[in-house]
Every structure is written in structure tokens, then in C-alpha cells.
Image 1 (tube, helix red, strand yellow):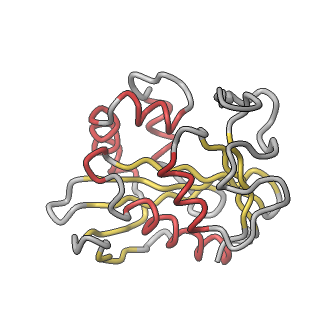
Image 2 (cartoon, helix red, strand yellow):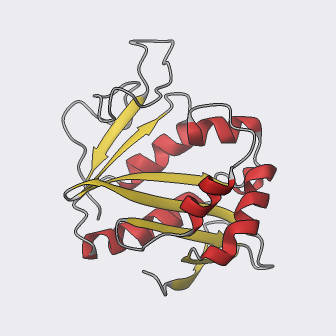
Image 3 (cartoon, helix red, strand yellow):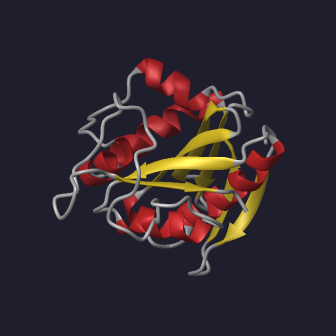
Length: 190
């Protein structure tokens, strides 16, 4: 998807452009990250992150479009409003991540981006995704639920907790209302 670019009409009628990320997007990605609320940063990284290091910015913008894919969403004025990515974690498997500018939440940006890289993922041999999501992040749960064609047993994106799919060393959030694990889901790209 290295040369991918498409205009998308969101459910509220807004026109955005979704395209493959490029190393030149580094400054815009840093600015977009700085504009995120503390809660949005926490929901994306499962930790309090105040800024992105040069190494992180390199990693996030210099993708190979095979094992690591990333698409950016741009408003009609060219402002970055979201990024969706996946990173291959094993044979046929990848972990997705999505971040959307706070004032663009609940408008369809995350779904629009993830739907586009899911189709490209199949071409790259990705047969399923594993994702961890805070149980207190209903927007992400809704995106997963809308993206899933089949969730693995015990990993229903609508449940408050699912089976563990990340390595034991990965940071995990607490779901105070039940078993203390973050929610995970496994699904097949459409």
C-alpha cells in the first residue's frame, strides 16, 4: 500500500484523504500527537506518554508497507487527523493500532482507515489481527466490533475482558469491574 491514496466521505459528510504514511509526515505526526488529550494518549499507548522520541517518530513514519503498514487520515485542509497501523507479530498475524484527533472522534475516521489497511493486509499475508484495548474505551471496542468478521472464542470485543493475546511483558490496563485484564480481540480481516 506504499502508494495508496483515497478520498473518503465520513458518515457526517466530511471529506478526508486516507493515504500511506511517508517519512515526511514526521513533523505532522509529532504535532498531531502533541494535540491529543492525555486520555487519548493513554488509550493509544496504555501509559502516560508526554512526547514521542526521535526514535519513536522514525519507527512510526519509516514503515516498510509489508510487515509494518500505516495510513494517515487528512482533513480537507491537509491537517493530520488520524493514523492507523498494523505491525506483523508472527506468521499471518499482526497487531493494529489507531489514534484519531480528539475533535474527530466518533465520525468514522478510525473505521475508514482500518477498513482500508485490512484489505491490504490480506495481500501481505496477514490472516488475523490481535488487539488489546482498554475496557474503558468504547470507541475502540466499537471499531473492533465493526471490523471483526469472526472473533476467536473467549475474545468477544463486546465483552469486558477477553483472552490474553499479548506477551506477558506487554503493559496491560486494569478492568476494575471484573478480572483486572485489558480487553483483547482476535479477528479476521474482511
